[in-house]
Each structure stands twice: as C-alpha cells, then as structure tokens.
Image (cartoon, rainbow, N blue to C red; front, side, top):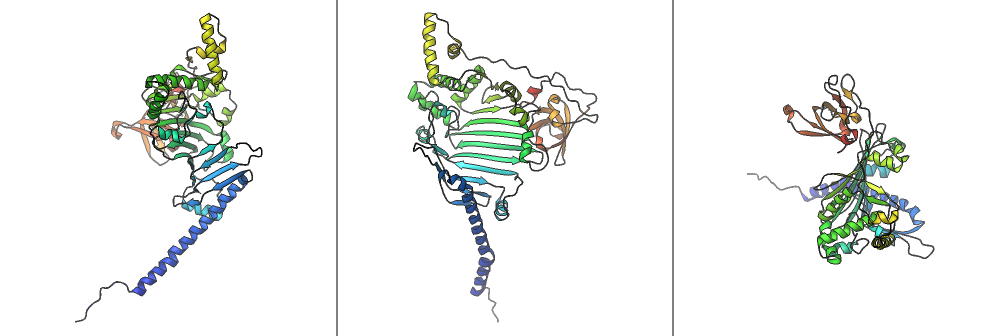
Length: 479
C-alpha cells in the first residue's frame, strides 16, 4: 500500500518564500523608511539653519512614527552673547510635530508641504527649561512645572523648580507643553493648548473662531473671524494639597494661616501689574488654592466680536465684549472682574503699608495710593448689558444659529449636516453648542448639538409664539 507524506514545504520552498518576503515587502519598506528619515533629517536641519547664525544649536536624533509624528529627541539653543554676559538659553526634551498621519508625512516629504492647512496639526515640547532668565516674584505667575497660578506666593519663594516639586512628595513626571490646531467644514477653527505634569497639575486653554468662507481657512480670513470661545482652565492633580502642607511647615503653623498669607501675597502680585481683584473673585480663588479642584475662566463673547473689531477696542469695551467669568469647583460662578490701578512693586507696597499704618496711628489722612494698599478689596458693579434687538424668525420658522439666544425655552427643529433632524425644547445656547430637551416619545433626554454640525434651525409655531423682548442676550449665552 502506498503511503502519503504530510510533511510541510521543503527547505527550498521555505527559502523561496522568505526571499520573496524580503525582496518584495521588507526591503521596499526599509528603503522607504530610510528615504523618509533622510528627508525629515534634512528638513529639520534646514529649519534650524537661520537659528544657527545667532545661537549654538544642538539637537538629538530625528524620529518619526506610524501616527505621523515627527521631531527630535532633544534640543538646546544658546544664543551667542557678544557682551560676554549670561545669555538666556533654552533646553528641551522631546520636540514633536503631530501631522495628520503617516501618509500625509510621506506625501509632504516627497512632493513638499501642501499649501492647504490640514484639518489637524499639533506640536508638543517635553521638559522645556529656560536658563538665565530674570528671577523675581513675577516669574511665578504661572508655574512652569505645577501649571498652577501664583504657585509660590507667600511661601518665601518666587517659583518652584522640579526639585522643589519632588521635595513636596509629588512625582517627577515629564512636563509637556502642547498645542493643537483644528478646523472643520462648518468654518470653526480652534487652537487648544496645554501645560501639564502628570500627578501635579494641568493648564488648558482653548480659542475657537468662526472663520468666513468654505473649505480650509486662509491666513487672510482670520482677520475677519469672529470669536466663538475663549477659555483657560487650571486643573489640580495633587499640587495644592502638597504645596499648602509644604509651605505651612516653612512659613506658618496651620493650613488656615498659610491660606491667608497666600491670598495676601496673591493680591500683592496682581498689584504689581496694576490689578485689584473683585472681592468675590478673590474668594473663589482662595477656595481653589485651599482645596484644589478646577478653576476655569470662560468668556461669553458678544455676537459681533470679530478679531479685527476687538483689536481697536479700549480696555473697558473689550472686557464688556468678552464678559469673562470664573467657575471654581464647589461654588457658584463669579465674574472675572478687576479694578485697574497704578502698578506698584512689592517693595513699594510694603513701604506704603508701613507708612499708612504709622499715619493712621497718628491720625494723619492717607493719600489715594496708600489708601488702596490698606483698604478692603472693591466690589465692582456689574455693567449693564447692551440693549440688543431680538431677531425674528422667517415665516417658515427658519432662524440663524447666532440668533437663538432669546429663544431658550422655545420648541425648535434642528437639522444637522449629517442628514438627521431633532425636535425639542431649547434648554441652553452658546456659540459653540446648543442643548435640546427631547420629547418623551424620543427618550426625553438632553441632547447637546455642536454648532459646527448644525445645518438649519426652525422655531416651531413661529407665527404664534414671539420671543420675550426683555431677554438678556448676554446671560443667555453663558455656558
């Protein structure tokens, strides 16, 4: 009887497959990766050449990955100082550019960077350090490693170093500065920034603009762009508690005592730049500095807040146009309000306080500057909102998204760019999004609809229902 062999491929057959895999797959990929790495390395050198004329530039190896990220492992820039003094130098860890993807990176390396802005572009720098910069109390307005505002005020220090952060018992994580640009077909362009140290603290900022025109935004169109959102948030991840305990041992005998010392020092720092905070604002900050959580500064820009118009506004008009306010974990929002005063250095404030106390003991009247130093914080009155005519819908109920503020509480039909449509009661409106309460037949839940996805809005029964002309447009736009 004949026997059938079940053995696998012979050794020559396996060698043929391996040769085919190497020559047809691995070798071309290796050549492509080498070409891409060479092109990126040359491009990095080209970008650094102008800087090398004025500074000593040293960089680490070039890298790229499958996500389209490209950059250098480290960077050091030390400007040439002809005077022979201490020049400011910059040193970083990993510097990366986040492109839309590997295919975009390959095409840009071979054909050149396209003129049209990609939908998403990011940039990040790890462990940025500036050596030789001027030191002083003002250097600690935003902590470089804690990402917290006025991090060392009242603690016998101007700012904290990475070693200080570690001595508080916090982790020695990388500090990453990042920025991301995005735009959508609806004409919304945004820039999001962050400064974070994992386990310590995080700062996040966002700027969103409504850019005229369709498709990718052009540089010249940004001058006519309207402000949609402007916010800045500080998120505590353990720094506040560690800092407060550390400084209590260094300065006072109790956490409550240090809280008072810190708040007084913060008031003095703000005075150096000509600001006196509203009493409610300082109380909200004190809550954040004592208990941590989140402090978020948000704005409610008016309907016609274009960048070009804001550039020509005086300080008071700009402040009223933005209508900034502050949210702190655990308390109601307060206005981000300051009284503008004459700037005074910390030394001058201390001297003025000493003279004021001596004069008050002698019964001598105080001049205005001294009175400001020793007086209670002001309660700044809320400005009257501008009178804005209420926009009316068309006969069929259609209305522009930007005109929805007076229609909170009315029933709407919202159609999106994806072909879907929802009907419900408008619960909340902001330039960046609206919130609908769906009827019980559709679930009865609250639905958030981003502004860039809205194609059409109709006010139902527009002929019979008229908006309340006393509606406060400014308050209706609050997030």
